[in-house]
Length: 314
Image 1 (cartoon, rainbow, N blue to C red):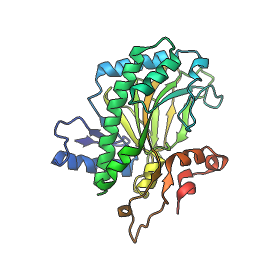
Image 2 (tube, rainbow, N blue to C red):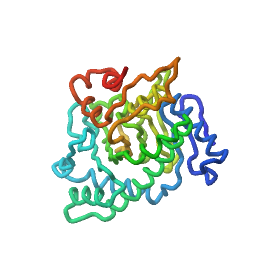
Image 3 (cartoon, rainbow, N blue to C red):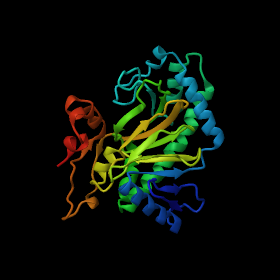
């Protein structure tokens, strides 16, 4: 079902037809996912529902998106931290990204598409919507397995009803010979969960618990890197640690494109009482996820080595 070799992250097959709630396959996969998230903060999931055709289509339209003039892309604004256009910064010259809030609704994807292409781009809109629906389906399955593995299934429905998804498009251009190869600096995501999907150009690295940086080489176009964010660490009472990662580009490579599906909980995140006990009491107060994002962008949050602990740690 799952596999792992030295200096690689676990690989878990999420396409098995026998993967249904209540089956032995489901139970064993729940445990595999929990172990991967606790030990690595991430895993590679194989999810064949995303066809090669959709993979090629969504990355083809991603190139079209980044080929637009900068002044058009900068129209991608939001009052939510991390939801808008990012790029043209001297300290990250290779990196550029845009985001679609609530991408599983036609209204949101169409609104973003019309903002970028006033005369329309049906191919972009359709691929974004189809892709987002499959990514959200995958996220709901995996987070459900995480909840079940900890015996807190009771929390699942209320969580799903309040989750806010963000689809982000990423571009890392090839560095000039005199430029830095740093595509994205080391960080953890401020999400509950993150799902990263790339084109054929590698560059993602994750930091192991032994402080070793390892290259992530997805095994197929149906491979997705599922990561824990800071909010999931707090929710799990530190049982799951977030995935520390970065992107390093190489001179002479092609442009790296990737997509990320990020989950945030609207309202208050409550830490389940079941995840604390006498030997390991609850370490976090209930917290507002989006207020935490704002805190993380404040001067205090930016200077903090672990902003989630400073924001709501006990």
